[in-house]
Image 1 (cartoon, each protein chain N blue to C red):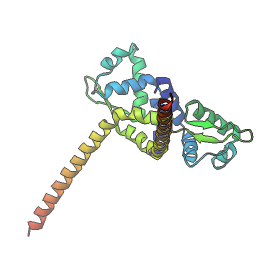
Image 2: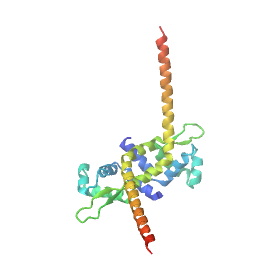
Image 3: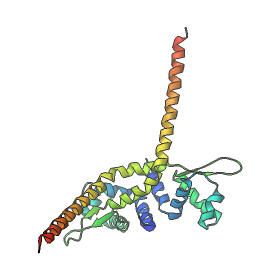
Image 4: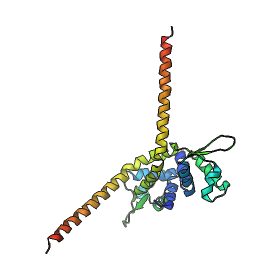
Length: 120
Length: 120
């Protein structure tokens, strides 16, 4: 994925309303009017968010004459996932080390617990 | 992951220099001076990017007196990965359908290829 495409994708995702719009569109395509309903926002405000998402390739708009349904375009999110792949090993190793550490702690607790039981 | 944390993470990742800094730090911790070298940027400009990354929880800074090494904090990226998980099924289904379509096309080509071979 090109650098500037990733710039646009990450920038579009940095807004909670735009992420909520994506979450709604993940359930199925819908009109702008229906999309706006739960958001307590004006149609122009929603349209502005949709333009940002569309420029980032995260949604597409239908070309039907009567209504232009919005659809999620999940391929752009796959671009983010591919980028994340370079770092996956890092946080997995970190979590593994944390797991080991917690198990060591629990082991120590068990040992000291047993010692306590042996006391009179 | 809290909404505003994801806002900060995505916003920090929307800049190619900041992503390049993370790619460098994925190789190991380093000083700001060494980090700045390949970027052809002033130290204050690099420091500004580091502050954005630090606020987003994507890096941490050492507290050593002589130098304050920068380290990647990959847990914040796991937050992005967890968010992406809700959408993974969508692009995987899309790619599966594309695969099926390509195989259907290839099947047709093979069939029409065979037909051609049978012709005199």
